[in-house]
Amino acid sequence: MRKLFIILILFGSMGLFAQVGKDFSDLEKLYQSGQLSQVKSSLSTLKPRRDEEKALVGYYSALCQKTKTEVLAGLVTVADSYPKTSYGQLAMLEAAKIHILEREIPRAQALLRGISSADIIERFYWLAVTYYWQEDYSAAIANAENYLRFNPTDSLAESALHLVADSYIAQKKYQSASSSLNKIKKLPEPDLQYYYYRLGYAQELMGDYVQATKAYRAGYELDKYSQAAFNIEERIFALRSRAPALDISFLYPYTPLELDLGISLSDSITVAAPGLPQPPALDAGPKVAMPAITDSMPIKILLKPISGLYLQAGRFSVESNAERLVKNIRSMTIPCTYYEEAKPGGKSWVVLAGPFENQKQMNAAKTMLSQSQITSFIVQH
Image 1: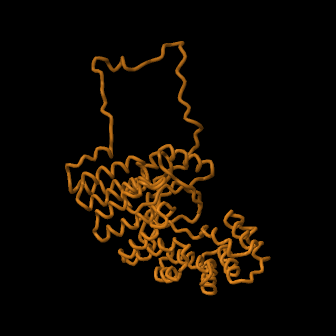
Image 2: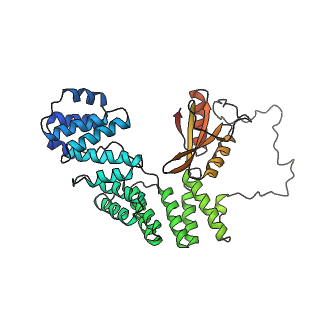
Image 3: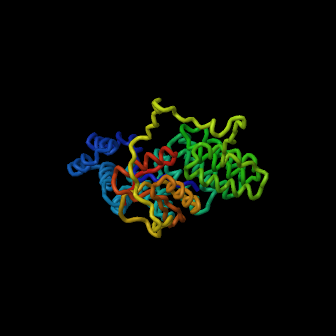
C-alpha cells in the first residue's frame, strides 16, 4: 500500500469555537497559527470550569509536549477523562494516529471506534487504514468510501482512493481497482506519476499488458529519476519477461547518428583562424570541489550514519533501484551510498549523497542533483 501520510497534529477543530469561552478559542487560534510559545504561556493562566474547556486545555497541553510518549500519554488522559467532549473525541483521533504510526493497530482501532462526533469525518479514513493492516479489505473499502462520501476532494482523498484500489487488488478485483484509481485524475493536483504506476499495475494483473505498458510509460516520462520511476522500471522488465514483443524502447531513448559522408572528417572540424577572437566559453557557474570518492567507500553501508551532512536522494522498496541511483550520483563526482532500514512495515533502502564537509558543498551538490532531475532534501545526522 502506498506510504501513509501520518498527520500527528490535527488542525481541524475550527468549528468548536462556539463550545468554549473566548479565552479558550483564542488559545486554539494561537496554536493553529503556530505561535506555540504563546500557547504555552496562555495554558498556565487559563482557568477551565466546564468539561469542554478542561478537555481543550488538556488537549493542547498534550500537543505541546516534547516527546511522542508524552504527547500520547496526555491525549489518552484527555480521552479517558472527557470522552464525550469534542476535544476528548479529537484526543482519541490523534492518539489513534500515533498508535497507527507505531503499528499498534488494535489500540488505534479501539480509539477510533470510540469517536461518535459527526464532525470528525477523518476517523473513517484511519479506520480504513486499520482494517487494511488487518487484511479486512471489505471493511477497509467501506470506511474509505464513507470518508470519500463526505470529503471527496479533501487532503486525504487521494490516499483514500489508493487504499480502496489496493484493497480491491488484494481481493483480486482488478477492474474495480482500476475504476477507483481513475477517480484520482479528477482531484486537484494529484500525484499523477504514482497514479499511473498503480493503474499500470492493476492493468498488468488483469492481463492487459498493452494498456499496462501505456500507463507505465505515461508515469515514467513524468520524472525518470523518482522512486516511482524506478518501481515502474521494475514492473516493465517483469512484463517484458512475460511478453517479449512489448516495445519498451522508451526506457532508453536514443537519437540516431547521421553523418554526411560527402564531408571529410577534417572538413567537419572548425579551427579558429590566427588573430580572430575565440568564441566565449559557456559559463557553467562557480565550481565547488566535492569530497573525494575513494576506493574504500562502499556503495552500501551497514548502518545509518550517526553524524555528518547528507542529502537524502531516495528511498526505495527495491534494493537494486537504490544501488542504481547511487552509481548515477557518483558519476557526477558526488559521494553517495545507501543503507538498509528495517521497520515493522517492511524493509526500504535509503540513498544518501555525502557526507559533505560544509554547507557550501552540500548546496552545490543539491543544485547538481536538481539539474539532473533528482529530488533531494537535507538531513543532518
